[in-house]
Image (cartoon, rainbow, N blue to C red; front, side, top):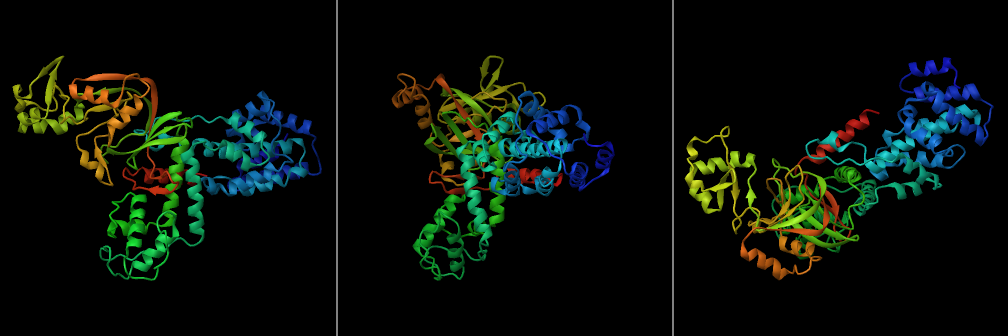
Length: 547
């Protein structure tokens, strides 16, 4: 037991209180020792009867500590074991995991470890528990993230991943150091592990000095001579995936080799790959390595929020990257362009399962869209909307738009449902992929095919438009007997609405990653179209400031 006169002093201290607290342990118990059995019993005593004398971080983790040390009879993990040094090193190098070393009291942990040989069983027990408390903080940050999704953006995130402290302790007990623990406990997701590798690469670039800015100037086309060309060579030579040949780095001519390098850069950075060096390309070239690192870090945080079992066969939609991937047994079988919600109609982030497909769908216009967007058009020219397949529904009956006097209709007395019949002009195209959810969001076809030729594709009201929906329909229906491409086309040609249930629902994950890896393992970057990176980075900075 720690004497009351010392614990009272501990509670009055701020700032370096824990350092002083452990110094008092050394002063009180200097020269004493503890056997393993005595240490184990002291840990139990501290957790059961000496609660108020324990440091605050230990009390905050008390339930998890009791579960491990008492309920599961867990052996001490830190005292006289190299894990102590390994934990301190892992916390010091937390930036390698996309975390912040400033979140963990490494200096105090080092001081505490130096007291172990002088403290008796009670003092050693406090040190053991203190190490375990910060191990749990680090393990939680690593596994499920530093912030709750709902706290960052309550309107758009709703899944939350539970932290299993018992699993963290069990894995640690089977490892000799934190390196082995991190490899086994970090999110076991291909995308996360790839981002961690990219983060290490960009930290090396930062350590080497980053890259120099490219001067702004006139638009540069293929064959032009320009004083900025050597700087562009030097910039593209720093990062992987763009410049294949460094010959000509002193030239001022924008030759074909450099044009191809610029096109690769543009493609990897979400720009039109036209090879023209304009304002957007120069802006992207000049985004600092530090900003790219921050981008990677916030993306890793989001991946910690995701379920680790995405499904043996699943669909992953990256809203920020305008891309859909269909993955089976870890192998990407399909990559498809998509269009997503406009910045003021943001597509949400969540996970669900595609349960059925709907061919020749009706578009039931959401009331908000019907009132804000359709009503003015109906007042101006109901016949034009009718010509595009729209009709009103009153009760269960369809009513022609031209049979309604829209002049007196307002948002307050709007009693109709507006829908668009199946057909070539239908906003949902010929097929939609349904995973019923509270956001009323789904994947679907679109008649606006030309939009997929653009690099920036935020055009919808929140749903996800697919560049090749019939390919995806064929792939998802392949396990149903008779559902060939020919049958799908035949159903579409009939023009009648038809629902087809999947033999097995397919998980679909809508994500937001402004950094991701292509199939060659290269980093791809996109702009923060919804401002979510900025909000998350601000929230993470606020959390760090609270320590």
